Structure formats: C-alpha cells, structure tokens
Image (cartoon, rainbow, N blue to C red; front, side):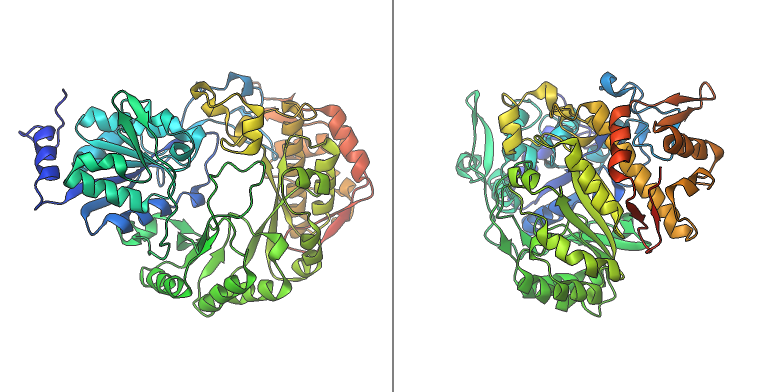
Length: 559
C-alpha cells in the first residue's frame, strides 16, 4: 500500500479514512478536466461546463474544486506520435498556405503537474471527465496518477465515453466508479454514500462499479431537473477568452430528438430549461464579468418559439453571442435570424453535412431545402456565416463533395469542412466495427482521416481538405482586394505572407498540383494528393464564381 503525500507526517489513508467517516467533516472532491493529445485543439472550445454543473450539484454536501488540466497551457510537441501512417501528410518542416496540421501535441498539464495538483488539493474523491473515446487514454492516465498519489483516493469517471463503454475504464485498476449518463444526481448520491454507507452504492442509479471480481453496470441516467445553474464561481473567468472578452459555455436545453447515423452521443431526450432559470443564469454571467456566451445546445433552435423567447432575454445585454456547436437550419426562419442579430449574434455556424439529398437522407438528416431558402437573407445580412459539411461519409461520392464546395464557394460564406470519423456509439460505428477495441481508440478522430469509404481513400480526403483551404484563402483575398475579377489574376497577385506561399498558390493554379516548401532541403516538394481529383474539380467548377467571406467581392474561375 502506497502512502500519499497529503500531509507531511500522516499517511493519506488515515486522512481519507477520517474525512469520509467523520460526519462532521466534508468530503473533499476534486473535479478534473484532463489533457488531450492530438494534431490540434480548439482553445475556445474547452470551457469545462459539465464540471461546473457537477460542482453545483454537490457543493452543498462537500468541499469541491474544479481544475482544468487542458486549457491555458502551452502545448508540448510529441515527436514520436502513434500514427506513422500519417507522417507523409502532416510534416513539421513544410510550409503552405493550405496546410492542415504539422505537429502532434500534448494539450494541457503533464504528469508532473497533475500529480502536484492532486497533492496540493488533498482530495478524498477525484472525478475525471472523459468526453471522447479517442481521448479516453489521457483520462485514464489522470486516474493512474491519482492512484499514484494515494491508492485510497476514490476515482470516479464520467462523460460520453464511460457512458458508452463503462467496462473500459472499470477494466483499469485506476478507476473505482463510473457514472453513466447525466452525472449531477448520480455523483451527489455517490458522495453521500461514501460519507455514510458504502453498502448503498450498488443501488445508486447511474453508478457502475466492480463487484466481486465482475462489473456491475448501471443504466444511464437522465436528469429530471435541468434548471440548476452551473457553479462558474469555481472557475476563473479570465482563463476563458474569446474576441477579447471573458466567455462561457451555456445550455438552454439538453438532448436531441434525432439519431443521425454519424452521431456518437448517447440517446438523450430533448428537454427545455425554464425561461426563469435561463434569465437568472444570464444575470449571473454578467455579474461575473462574462461578456461572451457560446451556446452548446445540441439543438439550440429546435423549438423556434422557445429560442426566440431566450433571445428576448439577451436583447440589450451587450453580450457577444455564438453557437459554435452549430445551428439547425431546418427550423430557422428570417424572424429568428433578425432576433439573433438584435440579441448579439454576429457570426453564425450552420450544420449542413452535404448538399446531396441522398447523402443526408442516408445519415437520417433533413434535406438542405430550408437552408437554401435562408441563403439570400444571410448573404444580404451583417452576419458572418460559416457552413460546416462532412468529407468522407460512407456512401458519399467525390462529386457530392464537389457539389457542396461549388455551391458554398459562390456564396458569401466560409467553408467549414469536417473530416468524417467513426464516432463510437453511432449507427455507422456499430455497422463498421466488430465492437470496441482499446487499441483502436486513437484512430477515432477526424485528424486520422480514416478511409472508411472506398470512394474516398486518405489521399482523396487530404486533397479535398487542401482544396477547401484553397477556396477559403481565395475568399479572404477577395475580402482584401476588390480588383480581383478572375482566378487567373491570382497568378500575379501576392497571396501569402512570403514568396513561398505565392509559389505554392501559383503552382496549384498553373499545374493543378499541391506543393509545399520544405525548410529542411530548402526546396519545393509535392504533397500527398489525388491529381486526377484535382483536375476533375477544376473541370467541374470552370466558369463558376468564388465570392468573399465578408464581402460580395467575387471572381470567375477561368483556369
């Protein structure tokens, strides 16, 4: 049995024993957001809202702290990443205005810092969120470090991954309990049981554990009361900034009534919060010095009347509003868009998936007809619009993707490509795999460019991502220079910050191939690509229009 360093002279086991079983003392709970490893991380998408909800549910029955081990740290380069098959695609020494990723990083605290944090807080319970299967090993590493500090610290893991695959974390000796589903009530019940009577833990809904050498797996829990206001006071507002303002994530609803074939979120029914609780939470955010809100609802505008009522609460508050999780086009209308503008929305993210009705139909998504009806208003509005679509879906053809790109490049919109990945828990995952395998978890990410569709091998996926980067670069150039009228004008224009970028652009336009400048050999090299796909793309878009992102400046494709 290891002794922790929670106190200079007293073993951690003794401290923990007295804390948990002395009814006059609160249990000390530490809620952790673990680091992740990937080729990229979106720093404005790391706010630990789920932990703030958990803290709000237990703060009256224990001493609780939140530590975000992922945000506000300089990423560390991992030179020997676990994907040798991607080395030709992502190279550190290559320069291109159309680059995707160059390095593989560790985003967040290293093991030494995690250990220091745990020793400093002297927790009885450490609860770790594990939101994505592909990052589940990093969450398990945080649990391992916790047990290294003291084997008597009770470790709990929750989030999407443990909900879907509870036996995976429970199969580790570093995790004592798993919470399945929405975790506020299960965690509060677990903390109470650990303070008083552990024999009652087996009957707590949503709490899974090891029992007599086997796994006792609970059903998932759906919260009945979703009006609780997250304990943001346990976070430092200035740690989360966007556009020069402190920001927070915000939920007005939970769940989604649909089951898109590619979605891996556990089925959770759609529920709206009360308007009163939303109003109170908005006020508390403003009082905390928060100037920007990002709505992370799965279906923010599913109920237009409800959403417009929420917008009325936000009007005149001076908040910058966004919905980076995406806006559902099928229930959107002009009235709501105008109200969004009045409330503080300036940039809109729409989820399109694909322009093809057959493609979206196979994914159990509505056809894009309503989005098409909104386009004229959106182009004439003051909104900056980014439209997200997926590259690499099963059954998707290269021409389907080209048609989506062709449509969006001619609109005053930015293209937001997402590389398809197998999301555990999705219908596509269940149909494409023979069950969860620990060795595959790191491949379940978009940056892996999994070639599950025979019509779209990895070279084709990479080529499409480069093409979209090219289109977006052209859109930004159009915003700066209204004198561009034809794509051939770019053969003379300065397209980047250096001569290397210009050469990459001009080679692509003149020779229809992607090159990059290799700083090691000080020369240009070909990138992995599908040359036939590039030629086919230019043939399909010949004579079409590319329009700017923030302006109506446009040019004709004449190459």
